[in-house]
Image: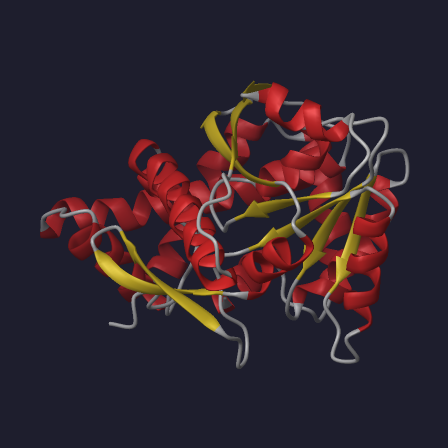
Length: 293
């Protein structure tokens, strides 16, 4: 998590950093920016970042890479994450990407219907592109923003979404975000939840993930069961400099009790997450010991 704040400028001076990056990516070719960051910025984080060790364990222990391959995997991961960050600012500055959406009809069916629905995301790929890729005229796309980045996102990015159907809902200590979530769902809108990161003393569900038990926050899965809402998973993965692929899947209701249904949703969510990580192993961006190692 500290790794993400470092790449994005933290909270101090974030506005200046955002504006500067937007100006730069408007005039400098993305590939040139990628090369500069890979040569001069990534090595710094490779040596000094706390994210190196958990990422090495991810490649070595979870994906079975040998020592040298895992070492190279970490470098590719840091490089890819820097590209994703640059892509976000390129997008904020008006840049466009070619996007291929797999199973778009699953999203479209819900977007054109009356009930609200939930979208479960993860810290993989470039999820911020999802709101621009999944265009729905009938439903607002509400995205939760967690942690220290929330205020910066709202203040510096919401204006960039003014002409879209995207709204950022910051998670706040006063729990006002809960009212915003419920109002959005009551109004038949979609709400997106990052569902692969624990923050504070959240209730969790344990599930086998990439060959080892891992804990996932229960909140979004429990809300889906409680409100009996349709649930999609959406993962937006970078495939080349100017191209992304969006993977949309729908979670099926299984089980009779609340606990059984929550566990079923978690298993399916994790299954789809494993699928995209096997295809894009370098795009896992949780920079801490996710498996508690």
